[in-house]
Length: 337
Image 1: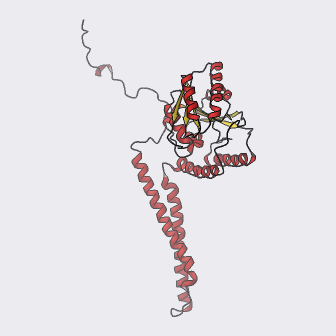
Image 2: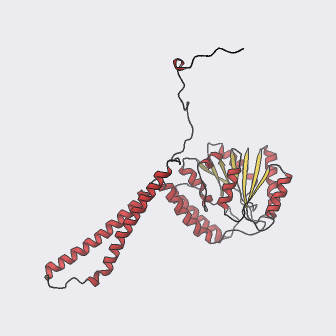
Image 3: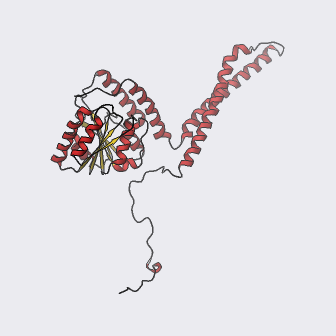
């Protein structure tokens, strides 16, 4: 079965058309599908439209949030409810073309776990396209996951990806990065991008600010999530070293002035070096705080490892429990008639 998870926020005009296109693709290709619409606190008739589709088509299910929790939460709810071996995601605004689904499934057959769409030709204003391309370049450079379009909402996953990847905040655009960090194989396929026929975009300039902050979070999680002291401790040691060096330099200058100008002379004026001293002390304190935070982070990770796996198993070979030898087998009992 193919599960199709679609977050919805004020898209009542496009839902019927989207369902029609999905049904057409499923009928032509012979797919067994389920469509899960997640209403993320819509204020229009989106939930009523979802209810009508669910009543007319048993393959359609709906989930309604009490308020707007964000796209990551909507996707998480859909993933938890999905029953298919493959999970597709696409946006509800008709900019993603359901006829691209066979391309994703064909790409998955190349032993991939995640396939992300690439809107090579976009029908968006330049002030959205240019920042998006800069953002995608930054994500690829910082994370090492080379995708042209991390923001594309059309993606396909094996369901086991979500047994290990958890979404929160606005990390939905970084699922391929988080999956790759767990050892899953990630690929990309070019998709057709259509102009938006109804409504307006839900994203503004703040999307890129939040995206950059989320990128820093993902970089830390994927690079140092199991060893926070490596980055915090390194920064702390560097800061502590610079602070110590500054104070030692001040002490050396004070001693030198006393030796060369006499102990009774006031050759070393404290006020002239007060800023230097304050910066040195601040660096010492910052270094100590960073190393302390790193130690606390290590303690939290050590505690969580009791319940959280820090590895990902692709497959197993043989039996988990050694089979008993014939000599160890219990004596057979006579059959009762």
